[in-house]
Length: 272
Image: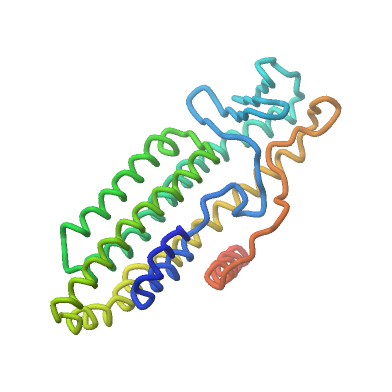
């Protein structure tokens, strides 16, 4: 989402608001909760598959308490079978929730970006061009996370690229409209439209971003549960614990919105 700042060089008074609010949406990476994974994930009726191109094991598959490593069934005790079933349950619940947050992050960002484009260009045609990027990104989410597949490298890089492309297109439209307004003596009208952009973007984004942060922090609770279940496994891969989730090298610093959301969640847990 941070690539929305690409427009800021043109109209800081307008796009600065988009960038500030877009930063409040959760980062869609495996490190957002303080953990990282080298694996991509596929969840379907057959079970949970973790896979990667480099490193060993290359594939980890578990379903109904059974564990397979690189296409070879492994022997696990009854306690580990229960842990693997719980890990499968948590993963099955996690992926659709990540998909929902991804979709809502796109909607929040494009609501702001489209509002800025519409306000600064007074053109529904140009706003519609930005909206087509939204539709494309939502389709990508449905075809990946929506089908239980999380390719962290491909998804993350493509996500940023699509946002950058939409931001550049909006910047081009806004700059052309601004130049035309100056040359035709209509700069005053542009100034009036710019005055209302910040408030409009805040109205579209503020409350929804805070709610989205609460949902993202709730996902972190599931990720923590997965890490605890993994660490409790008695199974050993080549005489070492099986690592699917590991602590990130750097723990993300909570934003003020995240800190407030985390406090609210903690207070609700205490009152239960």
